Length: 222
Image 1 (cartoon, rainbow, N blue to C red):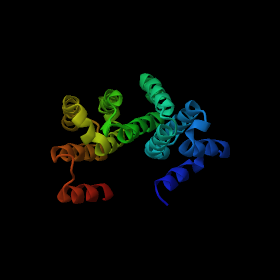
Image 2 (cartoon, one colour; image 1 turned 45 degrees about the vertical axis):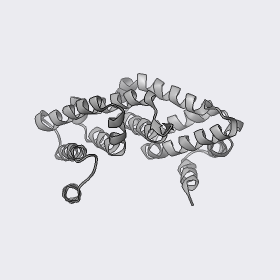
Image 3 (cartoon, rainbow, N blue to C red; image 1 turned 90 degrees about the vertical axis):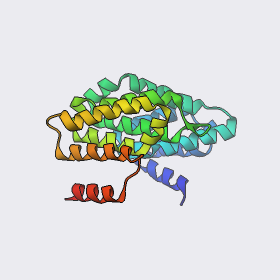
Image 4 (cartoon, one colour; image 1 turned 120 degrees about the vertical axis):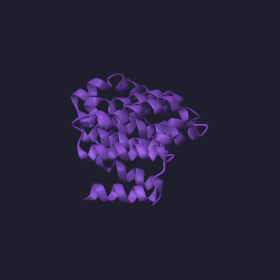
């Protein structure tokens, strides 16, 4: 099965009615309420980090289908409006549920990765994504392995794209990460390892050398 098979597999966690809604949206978006579809996808992404990692592919497919079918972008507009709403409330979200916050960051980075305009990432998402990553680089977040892990995973995935859109902010972000690695007390050994690995990854032009891969892989598994 190809990409669509993956998307359909990922919606099995929904109830039957919602599965039907999403399957229709993927193939025949003009026949469903796309505002509702966007809300369903975001709501699930905030609850389920596994789904939030794959939701970008589903959103991309719906956007492509809608564009071909009716030449509109209702779904994309609804999706971005909901992302903006959650972005404005991100500190409350983090305080309410660290898991939901990590899922949100994973989701918005996934959307940034998949949604392109003329083969370029959407400018509207650049600063919100950076703001989320900067939040993960703050002192209190670096104390939490889950947030450090999320930060490093997102930088592996979209760091190079993001730097091309705004290299100054990436420099500022990595200045924070270096300070955190060198100066901050109370970091776990895993968090220190993850931060060192991503600092070296960017220094190597967003590539992992064979030697680094062997070193970090052995350290994490020991």
